[in-house]
Amino acid sequence: MGKVNVNNVIDKSKMNKFFWAIFSVCLLAVVFDGYDMNVYGTTLPSIMKEMALNPTQTGFLASTALAGMIFGAIFFGMLADKIGRKKVLMIGIAIYAIFTGFCGFVNDVNSFAILRFIAGMGMASISPVSASLVTEFSPKAKRGLLITLLITSIQIGQIVATLSGVVLIGNVGWRAIYWIAFAPIVLVAIIYAVLPESMHSYLQQGKTDKIRDILKKANPEFHPSDEDVYEVSIANQTKATVASLFQEGRAWNTVMIWIMFFCNLYIAFGVLTWLPKLMTMLGYTLKSSLMFSAIISVGGIVGSLVGGVIAEKIGFKKVLFVYYIACAIMINLVTIKMSIGSFIALLAITGLFIGSQQNMLYAYATENYPVSILGTALGWGSSFGRLGSVIAPMLIGVLMSAGLSVSTMFSSFAVPAILAAVAVLLIRKSSLKDVPPSKTLNN
Image (tube, rainbow, N blue to C red):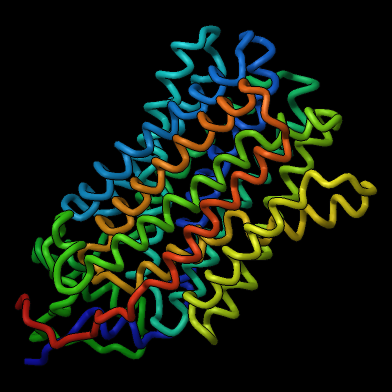
């Protein structure tokens, strides 16, 4: 009879079609997450006009979905560690798709706000749960890069939303942008067929056949025996509670990571929500303003990929610090008058440092928590970060109503960027280790 540590088998595996299938499905889910992040900003000028909203009302309406994300991130993050990440991902996508799609049929602000709140609850589960699944089902040597690539797909979804606006708003109307969100319903069936459940869940349920099959797919060189005893590392058995995020030396880093989540989402959602409107205030057309949003998102993809590769060599901490400082500098240059070519180049460079920090932070955060509480850790971190995403659209709306200049509103984003830079400097080296296993299951 031999003991088999399932985490070690997966950690030492090489990338193959099993891992690529899991990664691809999770990536597609996160693309739709990104789509929703930009759907309101894309349609904001049209909604303001049709529903006769002032900037303050528009900011509060933007925050309804983001407020839903706060509750959803907490609830689904904890639920994922109890009923399984696969089930939670399916539920979250179904809720998001149905209620976002219905936004395209309503005519009053209150109904729109309610639907966006519920859709936000579902959307909150997508990125954290997807990141948890990819973290568990990926070779250790490629894990950081895969997580960065996964979260980078958020920007792909944002670009799809923006380009959909460019093509459809003038011809069909803003409602069509929300109808597209019905598409992810198909993804629920794909997730059911392709994704495995957490190995920790299979272990608790005594499903050794499932564990054996997954390990053979993960590592073709693994040859199971009927007498094998399967186990997970002690680090991956910690009880999933909020308190566990502040135990065993994790408290300080948890606080710093939450601050970084807050600042990342404050900047990302503040810019994404208001950029088209702010650009029109500077004299650009709506179509041009939407294209500028797409350029920012493309920059975010490049920034995430480059940052992820560099972080593989020097670590995420150093890369994140540089990105935060660069963000604080570049965001102040956006309102300077220049030729259109120079302005597009400036936006592309600025985009490198907007949104990409959030992508890398997911990968960086996974280094600080055992797998068994990772869903809770990312869920609560994302939830705290959603406070920033709620506050930013409202605050920019208030500043706009108060008559502040566009340059002042852009400059305000430098404050959270500097705060995040300080937080990442204060992160302590993680004490998380691959400790010996203690929990076993005999088949």
